[in-house]
Image 1 (cartoon, rainbow, N blue to C red):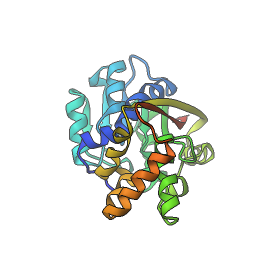
Image 2: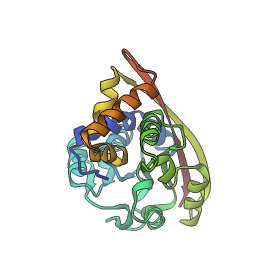
Image 3: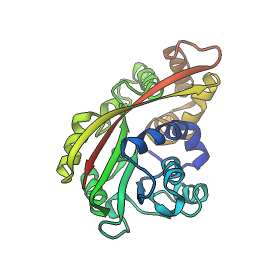
Image 4: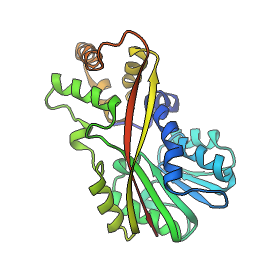
Length: 255
């Protein structure tokens, strides 16, 4: 699985959803003018940019372990304090932020329990720690169509719906409580994305970004062509533009 792909490839694949999701997560976390916020696992910077719009770039910091993504975020949000770092070792002092957020990243942490404890550590007492992850069990139509098609052809395909951690409200609630966060609440965030046609949907998978992209890129040409056709059928063989819905589960708690 790779997140060291060119940021433009990520933007075509998942960034198009991240940009729509970011305002919803920021609102869910109660981000408002006057606060200082950190974006953990910022990727190319969709949430960082939204936080900067609300707070001003100099009130925003971001952490990202991928070098190309961290560089893209710093370029996208000039003035933000963007550092190359993983969630498990955040390079800020205790209590540095009023709000610590993570969008679509908790699932991919090497040690999510330690990562969320680090998020709590850098939040001030009473500050908010919030995150969201896709509802991989069927609430994210773009991925569901891909993995349903893959499993039809290959029952051993590493479907995110089967393997992804922290993808349910119960898992997220438990993770937040285990980190010592208080007043834990769960919410659902829903967005839609428009596709110009089937190729606009399919081509981003071939760049090898994330679990689905990595699986797609690993296939022999004949198997990839079969998967492409199976995905087309799963989507109803669209002849033109179409839209897909996506739901994320969000969690927040007080440090």
